[in-house]
Picture (cartoon, rainbow, N blue to C red):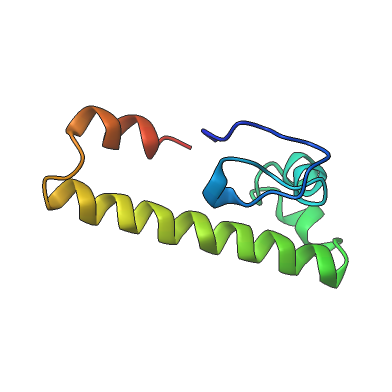
Length: 83
């Protein structure tokens, strides 16, 4: 991920940080790719992970629109969409 990891502060993916609640979930689940661990998360943590992943997809979609519209250059788009 391209985020600056700021642990201990309540932050949003939109302002460049990850909350102290989300960081351990992302580490444990390998950013949601380890389904065995995701299945064993609490309901609250699954909701946090879902909202984070949904936000990332919306962010990538927005960046793609901006790229297609000429607001972002190819270099930025290629770097920013690498997970």
